[in-house]
Amino acid sequence: MIIRAENKEDFAAVQAIHLSAFPEAGESKLVTRLRENAQPIISLVAEVDGELVGHILFSPVTLDSKSSLQLMGLAPMAVLPSQQRQGIGCALVKAGLAQCLLTKNGAVAVLGHPDFYPKFGFEPSTSFAIKSEYDVPAEVFMVVELEKDYLNGCSGTISYHEEFKSL
Image (cartoon, rainbow, N blue to C red; front, side, top):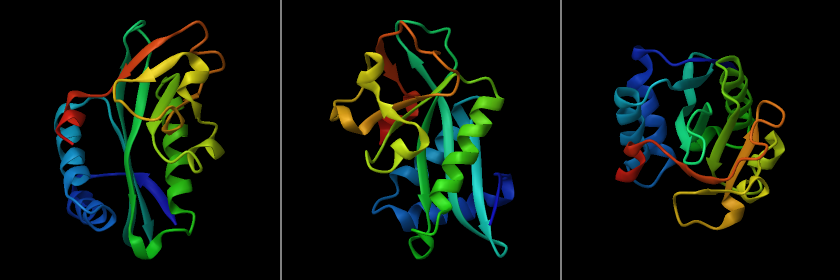
């Protein structure tokens, strides 16, 4: 398996991955809109035997009480159903978090499964006195600090790029 940066030639395959992994086209459309309107983004693909089988995207998020922080949100992520439970999603998350750190982001937020993301260091955002702009259960909105104590003393609400409102 190869994890690499997405390029323009990958767009159709990435769209197909999201369409096959989700019951509706919202995530696929969100990827397109974030590519066009959110900067900077980190967009990675997983390739197995020359075929794209997974995709992950990170885009900027903001903390209302401290807008100077460099934060990213992980979403969306998809793996072809036939390739799930083979470590592809884990590899995408690890590579994406490493890229976020390299690009000087101090923390990453995710709205996701509470049994999956903690293995990468994500903790409920309430551990940091931070909440999501969305009304979701506390255990599904998580944050990982990429820089030690990056969120120390912070509190408030994390907001995603406006394109998420279309989901």
